[in-house]
Length: 258
Image 1: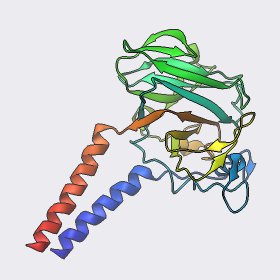
Image 2: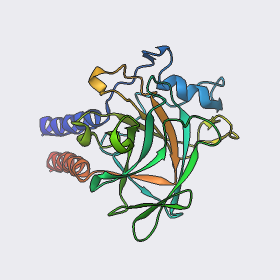
Image 3: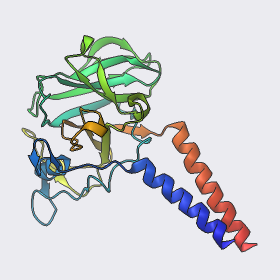
């Protein structure tokens, strides 16, 4: 019985690690110490032992892949997205937006290639009852089929500035191109041009790699944004795997007690 219990625990642990692990480097093509960890350290002003030291570890504190693929806007009906940083050779052409979970070709751009971390680079995304998407209160002319949406990194070099990589790894051929981090009421951060504030649990930092992960420098600093008033919606497969792992662990424990 102990062997079965150990096997179930190991299987669940292995699933958790595999769902989360994507290595983020702090030394990329842009130079030593220019990766995502540096980006978070740079905007952190307190209460770490010294300013410029985020409590977030970009490798240990990622949302598991599969839990950061799709999102809902919370009760306010609107979500603010703020540009944090972009350190990339493609900075002038990278775009950012949201796409319909059930039709990835249905998308709305929020930031263009000319946007950067200034006070003008903040937009409000709203979704109405009929699925229509508004940006800063203006109807985009695009309707989504459900409340679920994903985030994408696009390119102005693509026709229609279309998505290049998606928050859903399955749409990238299994390659995880976006990492996400949730606030914990620990760090106070200051985004360029804005007053400092506490990074709260309803706020997430999203960071993209703009080259296929296997061929990239893996620094995830190519486009970094903070979004708020959203919650992640785990994929059904992710929940099923987790449920099976927990069920197996529980069954093994019950047999052990018997």
